[in-house]
Length: 288
Image 1 (cartoon, rainbow, N blue to C red):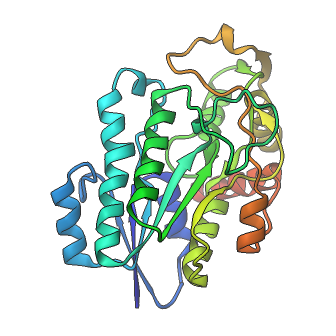
Image 2: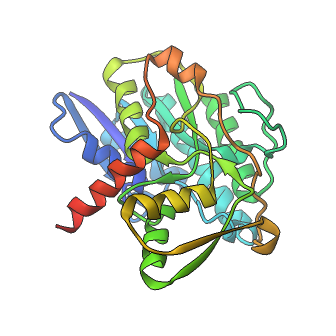
């Protein structure tokens, strides 16, 4: 039986993997969060791997507070860079395949056309730079790795844009949402299925991949779609980023080219609004 270790076990992607893996035979999944495994402590990681010997390690753990990272550089680096490095080193020692989840924020957004895996990353924020350093640490440590960059992740679980908009839509009559940051919303369940397919297929097409849902949107478009699909009555007004200043700079355009993952892994990717409907259905079912 294959043993799969999933870090960041209480986060939305790990929870989506757990939900999607229900009933999957021949695999044993272990989900750990900070209180069970502190990935920033090398000796803790080594001891955990010695005791549990996973065949795969899926690193969903990350410091994702983009704005707070600007003032908590050391903590972001420990989690996003050193944590990834320690997990990769332990995976190499035990012969485990390693999957690192990364971000579109490794790009500066100035290209103006979809980014592919060979485009030069130029992060604008501490969050983006520490995630990129984590990528480098993984790639330099072991060849048996997958790095999957994703964007605008949301789901029924955890804290994310979808759930924030639904909450604000219930509380307010009007909202302002930035319209000049362009990317693609990604349903975490769709990404979870891709990760599980890597494991089930035993893929050896190692390397860096881009994955998001299909299509292009601004945060304003995303918010409006959430309210339209959920029949929430709230007036949404588009504003420019300069009217909503934040400590961390965001890429103005971070749409990713997914040709490589579709070709190498033989997958079809859903359109973002179709996946949004599934997420909203999931939230409705969770409330019942």
